[in-house]
Length: 389
Image (cartoon, rainbow, N blue to C red):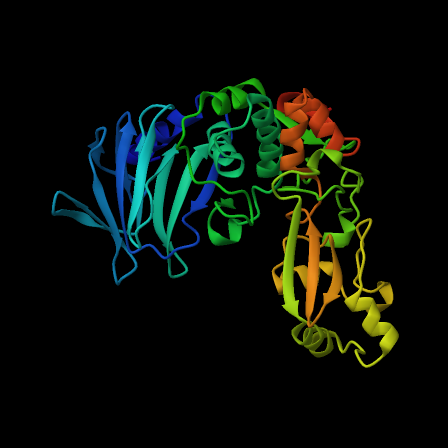
């Protein structure tokens, strides 16, 4: 091995000191970055280019300007001086607790703070930012982004375990794009650490390594969403796959919370045109018409107007941008009124319900066992031991 590569290997291994898995998360996936600023916020960072060359060391608050070139390279500038243009740039921390600040200038966004390191390169015509971050540090950012800053430590424990489980189960989801996970809702929302809330940090520490598995010790699909509307959903009604631990249950803990009820109005003509044009629904038939103008859901259903219509409520929700599939329909004058319950797909854990359970005195273990049917909470080391036997 070349000396330079050996040195870089040692340097990168610093953030592995706790034996944690390192995740590669594609960040800023919703925007096309044309200019950004990087600066260490705690401890020094090395600028490593083309995998082998240490360009220089950045101390705390030293700033570097990052921008793409027409040739697909990464341009670095500091204090008006160009440092060079490279195919790959990586800002590597010298200590495990280091974190950095990044702010996009074009387009302009709020600053974000991340643990770990930052890699920048062009992947299939896209100027790509990748945060290499230890799993447990990643979870702090996910908890902030998914749960907000005002929950109890016990609820943050719930979020830590389901987010850890989700990350490990889905860590190969975006390898085809050059990283493991994104920072958007197609994975878990992850905007780095911002609040520095000690309750979040403690929650991650006190649940370190804990994950949810099924009876075969496989990571579960730890699905979650905002509010169930009073009843969770069976997995096969949303994703066409029956999963033993994602069963519909009555959920009194979500009732009356912020996202429990919603209403949407639509012109009757638009509603019927939608059904006729997309599904060839027989709106001229009075019996069929009554079913879509007076549709009730006391319990969650899979189809609109009965299974014979083949109109999936999940499709209606997506097409009309409704908050959930748990809605009823009634006619008021020339308007169709959707009166719905819940917010999200409804499969697995209701965040507002879980928050309420914790406020009522239930433990994080109680919450997880309520929303996921017959699952096991296990330490990663024990799981790995049993799988090897």
